Length: 263
Image (tube, helix red, strand yellow):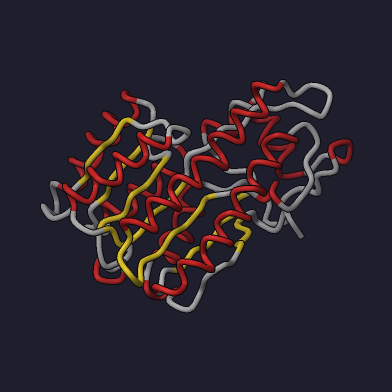
């Protein structure tokens, strides 16, 4: 749980309908913090809203507004920020969690896949950073959900890794500018996390999870020292900390949340 006053306003979350983004939204709703939830999945947002209403029924305080948005579209993101502020008031936090992952090594990745990764994983972050600059209260917080692949080479993920590295660099550069208004900007870098994106990589869920934990020398993966892949809630908890004033002197940081896989 996060103290509502520790965030100081509503939080806009992209990639809100599934995976880590959804776990962040659910944490915020349980904490009675208003949320603007952005995702391109109409059905996913509807399911999220149903869940939020059930949780909110016990408190009657938190509000959830949903926006169907493709984060690679700057105009759509801009309109969502305006709509979120109109509905929920000035924002206290922004969480950029939307992303895609399509496998492909240097000889397999297509031009279309390369540009999709940059448009969503890097461009989507840039659009959120610009929205934060224009709509986030002074003293607020931005958290970008990146990946440990931004700093640890991965075979078969050249476009994904490059796009996550670009997103982290953009966030830290923007964070330097936003710091003048007391706005903190940090990047959370998960490793293997039990999300639909991760499961799409596995032909066999049991084997896939085991390989992630044990490592794979052929792919130069060392495994996960803690002995399990992350739950989305593990990452959401760190995001919640960075949104709150408990992290009031933390900015421009890239924080691994991967069970030690990036040692």
